[in-house]
Image (cartoon, rainbow, N blue to C red):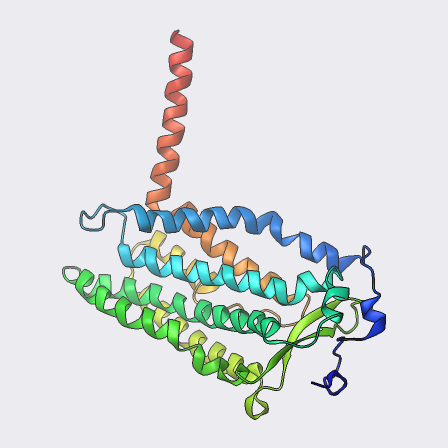
Amino acid sequence: MNTTVIPGAIHYNISYINYQYEYNGFPTILAIIPWIYMLPTLFVILKIFSIYLQTDWDNLEPGKNQHVFLSISLSLIFSYLFFIFDYIEVRLPATGYFTSYCAGMGPNHLLKMVIFFAFYSNYCAMAFPFLMPVIRLVILMYPKDYNKYNKIIMRIFVSLILIYPISCTFFLLPAIGTCKQLEYPYQFGSIWIYYYGAAFGLRNSTFYLANIIIWLSLAIIANVTLFYKLEKAKERLITLLYLIFYGTTSPMAYSTVIRPFSNELQICMVAWTFYRTHPVFNKALVNTEGASMERREHSRES
């Protein structure tokens, strides 16, 4: 393909091929900062998912609900996957570290797959939070048979959520991935990965906006309904936290610089709020502290 027809593409451009990485200020800083809080958050996400995998759900324990743990685990996992692919798409190449490498190769489908997985994981991350208030509503409305109904809901909706992003990304099939120069305030050599040649000239922004409106509306309706069903003040507080940080994809900002941090805020708040407020983890913390106190008392007696 003639890369000169792709606006902003750097492929085979001698200036970019000869580019050598050097510290370029805020793009490098923005690529480092997220790992300070995203790595601990990954530990929390894995801890939550491990509870789901290790629990014997045939023997129900107080404070544990199979479908709650599965829905929040899937939501957090896909949110984290979106962070990874979005990072590879923008913040990592913006450092300039791979600029020469990208310039030395042509547009290709491997680069496009980075875009596809970023879009796919983002749409899944938008949809899965909707299941949480629905599951809790079923528990409130059918206290005796909620497990049976939630099992059906999860079986249907998890499958649909994993499939539906294809309908929002099909236009990428004929497209190819390209490396492009980022605009101001980024310096020369700061690039990002994008796509060119989508089917019917479609763009992701149309599907993205429609999904935000749909899932935002559904999540607000479900969470508000759940809020009025709950009676305890503590449960209301948790519901509000879910509504703010978990029920939707945060629409704070969509600029290249700010947007990723709003996504990461959502991931961290959901994971840490669930981890710090759910009785299962509080019990583990209490047991750990109790064991430490027993060891100290035993040492004094010795």
